[in-house]
Image 1 (tube, one colour):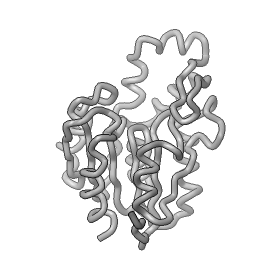
Image 2 (cartoon, rainbow, N blue to C red):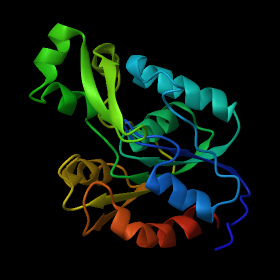
Image 3 (cartoon, one colour):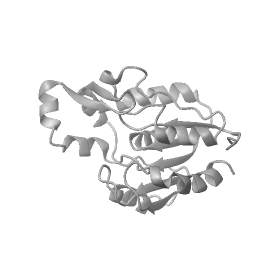
Image 4 (spheres, one colour):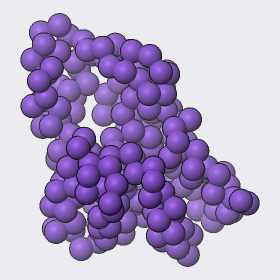
Length: 207
């Protein structure tokens, strides 16, 4: 498949404990020429924060008009960024991690994480455990559960998602007419429905 030339810069934002070599990032890179896929941890996963990732996206965007594709935490980051940057033109969000800090704080390991100051997390990009500071959660509470961006968006969510329940995307879409929600028969990864997502995203991002 020949990748499609881009008329506008598009940045792909990977999910939590993932990286630029993820399956979904590779899928979209094969289809879009010059798609930008940064390492959102910038090589320092232990000190990862929402604020640091948003700063990285801002530095990469450089104030230019861009569109964003985001998966899971990357989808939440795309929404946060768009709510603060009107130059973000369009968004494609896959299983966006709305309600991120609230859901993490309710996890069984949260209290031990807070006491220890760090948590060992399996990093899917590096295929090994990595340490993550509790500052990640403390910083995440600075941000809203549902970023109120106004730009056009496509939201794809699997009805069998047991990581970020689809009801979060449904709740968001119910109050944001700029977002078109597509509920798919898939899980959090959405790997088995990527061609369906591409069919919608191609015409939306590359009119």
